[in-house]
Length: 436
Image (cartoon, rainbow, N blue to C red; front, side, top):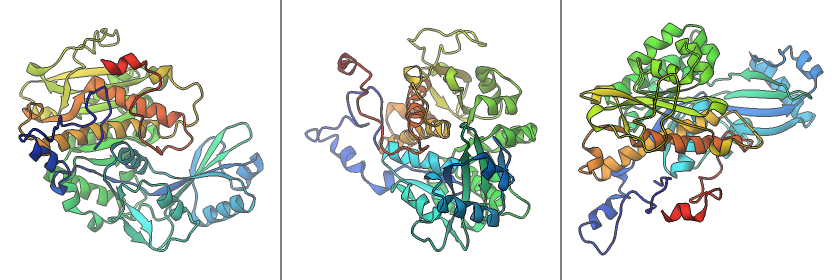
């Protein structure tokens, strides 16, 4: 696994083949038993973008600027018209977790495992075909459950004034059954990644039961559960239910400032992140032009002070210990809360091409760091970095930098999925930076 950051070495291990003491480490790195990966469950769907007029919106009884669920027969008719009139501009593999796992695999150049549904029969040019075409080859799709019917489709219909209207056809994306959840795969994973959408389905659909079965396996094998909230509307329906769900099942929470407000009732992203630590161990909160916040726990005795300027905020000098590494609260003897913040990379893009997926990109960076920690612990268990059971490989400040950079990369491209990893050297930084 590659890992970014300002380091002299491109790898975790300062290996020299001439040093006989380090040769076992070199051999160990490519052993299948010392590989780390993440597993996620998603509602497999394809994002279809098209430019339409207001009459098109009216004829399909959609609500301008809003999101509506449509029946499969309506979706087929709508899709057929879009093709016949050549209105489609882009077709992407979508889904919050699918995007996150894809970006993780691109960044880490390593394996992730996707659980969900997929059409048994895939025709060339179909949306299921596009899903596979736009998914990293490092994503393991062997554990998908086959279904006789379509996967989900999300139509993004862009009006002449740029307003976006969404029409969602679930298809059979929520038909994942509990017996399709492989315990052995979850047991060996570095993290189980979920979205709030998975437990909010129509009555009778098996997806919520499958999700809870995966959580059961993760808790059984002490695998951290990571949840991304997805949308404020789902959370706002019953915030207390979600607080209880988080407290009982989740270790890592990813959200934006609107979802944070719906969950906690607190508008300030820093205070909302702090409040979320009442229920989880680590919080990633993206806040648009205000940047990105992280909050977590660390062992009080081993917290490290920052060398960056101390930041004002709702919590005075909140970033004082941002050079600390995150831990799960249960793994701390004397837990203390630590926080970090970073402003948008390069002040933000000059032109934002796409806001869909920036938060998923940030989460993929955090997952890369969590998995990097597992990978290093598997290979060098007696390293000083593992004297305590840390959740992340890097400090909160370093993870913020990484997540921030990945978000920027998503914002400047049209697709929510990365097509390549980050550069080894940033063009925006002077050569002297890399000589330090």
